[in-house]
Length: 262
Image 1 (tube, rainbow, N blue to C red):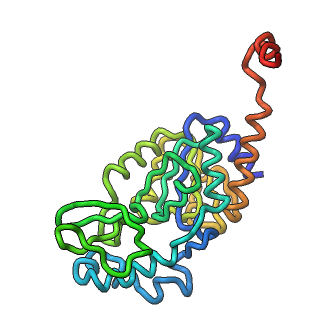
Image 2: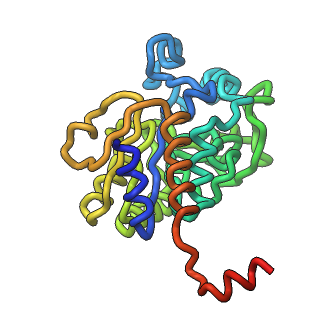
Image 3: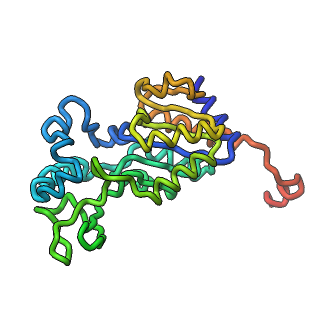
């Protein structure tokens, strides 16, 4: 069974990372905007979700973005998010690199999270570079900076580069890991897609956990392929790792174990 292969890879590795995408948050009620009936049908991204659109008409941009923020507001981590946090607690996962901006990995308890596309509920001013946290879904209109300019959500819009420091850290982790889990993403959009590529080039074992097959599935680079909902597959994976860890022999000497029982 593929999940046992993923388990063994995690148990035999020294540093594992996970790259996550929109698929892991769908079960939390965060929609995949590209699907039929999604937000992109009413708000074409090339018209609304670009840095040029923001600069040209910030008020129009914020009408779109506030609807997006309210769509994801109130979402809670699902069992898949919680399972990744559990794997970190078990020492089987070093970091989560995510393309999502919903903050659900942190809410689930994951401590080492790299957000490639920015953070939810964060604002930046393009004029003076001021930043602040704010509950965006509660806003009633475009937020203004103390300098008077309309602020931009601190997420990566189409036409913007990813945060260079975050990307560099993610790529470094990819090049130093020996296991890379790819979860809820087709890993086709660059530069995020470079994470599993770099990991594979460095000799890491790639494991894909997706609801359906992707181009990565057929790339010839993936060692273990697990299809199914993340809330099911990741929970089972965490259970397998936990069970295996519990069955490992106690490294302490017999005398120490006896003393511990007294």
